[in-house]
Amino acid sequence: MLDQVINIAAVTVLGVLEQAYFSLQVIYARRKYSVSPPSTTGPPEFERVFRAQVNCSEYFPIFICTLWVTGVFFSQAAASVCGLLYLYGRLMYFRGYSESAHSRLAPLYFSAKVLWLLIGLSCLGVLNSMCQLYLGLDVLQQLSSF
Amino acid sequence: MLDQVINIAAVTVLGVLEQAYFSLQVIYARRKYSVSPPSTTGPPEFERVFRAQVNCSEYFPIFICTLWVTGVFFSQAAASVCGLLYLYGRLMYFRGYSESAHSRLAPLYFSAKVLWLLIGLSCLGVLNSMCQLYLGLDVLQQLSSF
Amino acid sequence: MLDQVINIAAVTVLGVLEQAYFSLQVIYARRKYSVSPPSTTGPPEFERVFRAQVNCSEYFPIFICTLWVTGVFFSQAAASVCGLLYLYGRLMYFRGYSESAHSRLAPLYFSAKVLWLLIGLSCLGVLNSMCQLYLGLDVLQQLSSF
Ligand SMILES: N[C@@H](CCC(=O)N[C@@H](CS)C(=O)NCC(=O)O)C(=O)O
Ligand SMILES: N[C@@H](CCC(=O)N[C@@H](CS)C(=O)NCC(=O)O)C(=O)O
Ligand SMILES: N[C@@H](CCC(=O)N[C@@H](CS)C(=O)NCC(=O)O)C(=O)O
Image (cartoon, rainbow over all chains, first blue to last red; front, top):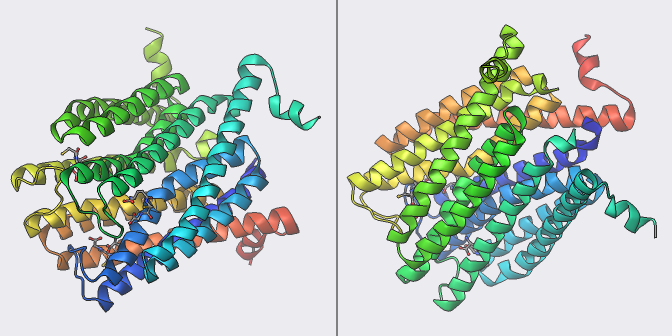
């Protein structure tokens, strides 16, 4: 049973480490630019690092949900590969955004595409399982037998 | 095994799609009102759309946790119905808040009520499972036999 | 099967209740200091309560992920105990931050340590399961037999 989720669990832990890294970067930026809590405004350099972490945190739960639904209902391999690509895209997003607002765009589009793929695969997996359960029809199986 | 969570997985994917929709609305609002990142302040019209998405994102992990705990430990049917109502309430909240701060209130109360129901059911489900496991007592079973 | 996650499910519900409590505190603070949405700025007293809730919300998904991965792949007992300590630390953080920015620091360090412990244990659990599955090696088992 656990074999079927071990790789997505590993990607989850990697994602957690990435979020922890982003938080640490905000803490360093707070020191560097002397922005003491509860303030969240300061020089643009600080605000970009700050917003980069907020944006990644906002998408993290969505990412985890689609990662697991895809992994369980579609394919663990597909979910893990997409998951690694997404985490890589987010690292690039964070680094790009820290440099300039414009440099965040390319990795943003990349990670958004991967996330849409994960959303699409999780829809497919869930719809297929519903067809199997309620209609007795295994659509994905039949498609792959062509 | 997967049959017992397929409906809550479907509600989860629906919730993810809703969050993606909210994010897209913020991106459109940023364009419409010319609020470039990392800024998050602008005309009240922008700020309301922005805050609506932030507020929904904040509650999303809480929602997912109670959805799954209720679905697994109490009843999948109850969890799915509450889940759909919650997502509907959040859509109304987002639309209302986008129009005026006051219009967010009615759907906020509605979605808060549904969330409290989910929290209550997940407490019930977990407590019942604990009683079963540690005391050998199936409270829900006995209640429903009256 | 469910017996192996019942305690972490209970800690999850407790975490949800804590987050709901933090949200209610922000609503009360909004009334007390007359900070109407969509505004998020006001007297420092309000901003500290506001930021305390935002910070706890940001870490909540990370906490839930490590709680469950540790509970499933390492040990449910260890995960539940760390989970309770983390939630206690976050309550102290919220109360401390509400009083002064400085009072948030001690509980922040405490909850960060517990979170790092959870991250470490989830890494260990996942790595051990991977070794077992891909190399046929149960490292934790062998370590504990010394
Ligand atoms: N969002 C956080 C990320 C980093 C973090 O967790 N910082 C700690 C130590 S400076 C904190 O207590 N932040 C206060 C806050 O988020 O308001 C921040 O803005 O600081
Ligand atoms: N919270 C986001 C939601 C939408 C989003 O993901 N926007 C992208 C493209 S404009 C972004 O990089 N936002 C920058 C940011 O969140 O600071 C926002 O405020 O923009
Ligand atoms: N982050 C929320 C936490 C509490 C909450 O959910 N408040 C409700 C009722 S005042 C709301 O609609 N807040 C508007 C907002 O978050 O912008 C806040 O700042 O108010």
